[in-house]
Amino acid sequence: MPVTPDEFRKVMGQFATGVTIVTTANSEGTPYGLTVSSFTSVSMDPLLVVICLDNQLSGLTAFKESGKFGVNILAEDQKDLSDHFARTGTDRSQGPYVTGKTGVPLLEGVLARMECEISTLYPGGDHLLVLGEVKRTEILHPEKKPLLYYRGAYRSL
Image (tube, rainbow, N blue to C red; front, side, top):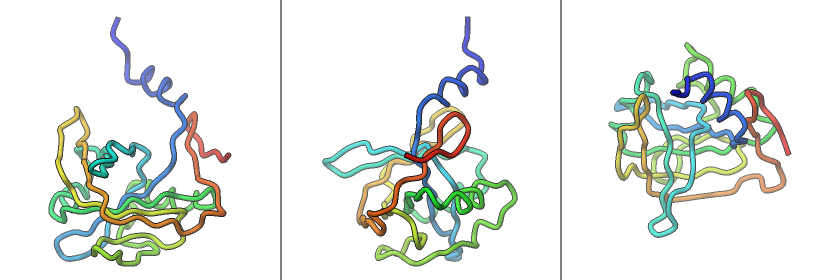
């Protein structure tokens, strides 16, 4: 018997994930951010990570055109920031943006962040898997705990 999307979503909800906001800029240089929990490391040599973006995402073209993205790992006190970038219809160009060393927009005040260059794009059903080579990393607030998402709600350690 096939698994339904609702059953799949419930099972995946049993897996706790960190919460990130991935960032890029469109061809005019306007920043774009999106809350993403589908993020993981892939390789240590070379240093690779992957993010998964919905094929219907309004900012998908910005990621493809820029060729780079930032991953901003949220701290447990940043639920409002996560909600802002997760909300449909929000102005994703508004946020506490700064420019990273590679030129990618990043967010201030996050737990940690990295700057990535897009290596390869892979189709993955209704999502696009974006493989990025990590070019720069920094930990901004090692004293803070991460924001987690588990069973459809934010959690903390």
